[in-house]
Structure formats: structure tokens, C-alpha cells
Figure 1 (cartoon, rainbow, N blue to C red):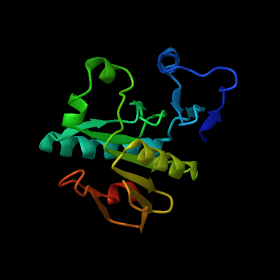
Figure 2: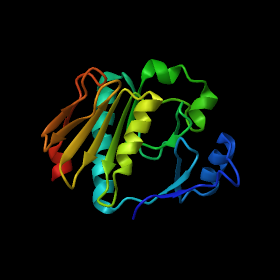
Figure 3: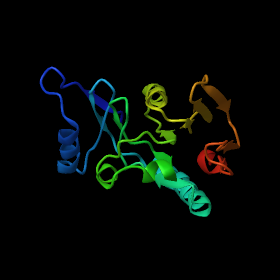
Length: 191
């Protein structure tokens, strides 16, 4: 199943509060919005992708509990990005001082902040639109992003102000300066 984009802009432009309420009123549907205000209906993940997402999130949580450098968020968290989009990365992380600088009401709804790091795990039915999503993250201020394609065993690495790097069948990924000491063993993704 692929994501469906719906353009209501000529009929109604949802305010941030209206979009938040739409999501609250429909908890069984995962919505996102792109920078053009198009409403995107995200399908649920399949079993293999969901299992892999859970393992990935767990690795980040364990690392973060040891380092206490920030906050980790799962795929259910929607961020109100500075470029106007509302996105829910599969895994995201924000430096602690940036998270703590938000007011409590900003943290409670859809946090009005771009994560420092995002990870997107492509489902078998996902398309090149994920690459556009990654560019959207970078334009919103995300510093480091990984797009992992289990089917082709390719990883696209996005860094702020740098060209995309493509790795074929890497065995691990380094969190670089953004996630100090973090190394992701990709055997859990490829197997």
C-alpha cells in the first residue's frame, strides 16, 4: 500500500490546530502534511517493516539512555517543521538542550521543531517520494538523515549542506558527530 496525497487547498487550508484536531479525531489514520499543505494518508506498515522499525528504535533508545544527550521519538510522533510540513519520521532524535528549550505546550501537541536526526525505513511499496521527504527534512533544518531501503540494501545519507551519499550493502552506519558513539549494525535490517 502506498501513501495517498490529497490536495484540499482550493477548498480549505487547515490551520495547525485544525490539522492536530483532525489527527486526534481519527486516531486509526496516520496523517502527514507536506510543505505545500497536501494531506498525506500514510498506510500502516507490514509485519517485517514494523518489526524492523521496533528494533531500530530500540537501538536508539538504548544508546540515548546511556549518553543522555537528547530525546528519541518513534514513528507515531508528528513534528511541525519550520518549513510548514507536518512529518512523522520512523525514528528521530533531538538534542536535549533544543528539546528542553521548547515550552511545555509546544512539546505536548506536534512539537514545533525539526529533529536533529531522522531515519526513514522504506517499506517494499514505498517509492522515490521518500527521497523528496528526506530533502524536505534537510530543508527544514534536520542535520543528519538516513533513508534505508531493505529491498536493495542501499542507504542514502543526507547531511546538512552536503550532497547525498549512497552506500550499497553497508554493514554499519556511524552516527558521526550528531550521534556521538552511536553505531547501527545493519545486519538487523538486512536479515
